[in-house]
Length: 285
Image 1 (cartoon, helix red, strand yellow):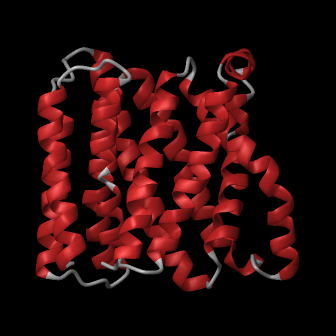
Image 2: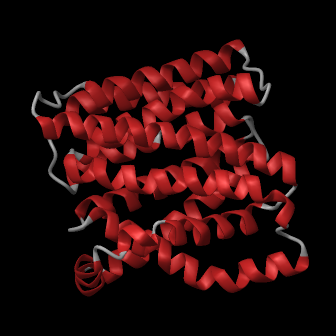
């Protein structure tokens, strides 16, 4: 994996963990995340219209637009539910772990990407570290615990789906990353609007009490994923997605130091496994 691609992915990982922590600290998780995407959609809408006008985005790619919109919309809703029901440093590793576990299989079966033996070992280390981190604590046997686990697993499935869709879309359509991510953010915000109409009081409260955090989240959601789309052009899907999962390390630190969550040592042990896997991928993948 080229060093430049790795640096892009590591920066994206830090940004991703940070905006997720902001979402976890909000009052209404879904409203908070949706508003952040709305901020991005508002200023990107003129750009998206211009891209359709000049051909940077084209109508012929509408199946890809629909597919990525559906996957990202599901991701937003399931992520907000996972944070509403569960611990940040537990829900985050489970959701990201499932995503990175499914992407190499999808890349092999759908995109015909081949993994080197060392790259496969690195991915296995990343997955093992993520699973240890995420499952080092007991979710409990109550209904909220089961629902939190289901929401986190659903989030992971949507992560795998949109990574595979976006990677293939970049190859199949020739669309540049910036127009693509702008179009995706506008579309997913519009698709989720019916759910937002029932939460108007929560929307107003988030705007009143969390505006600086919302602006930070908006910048993070756009900038972080733009870096990933650029990295997809430089390295195989599995390597990019696996390396990005070092965000688990940042989530453990943030969860312990800023959110006061427990199980720091156990989750840090899993995080170190992730670092080892990323090193193998970076050097030998």
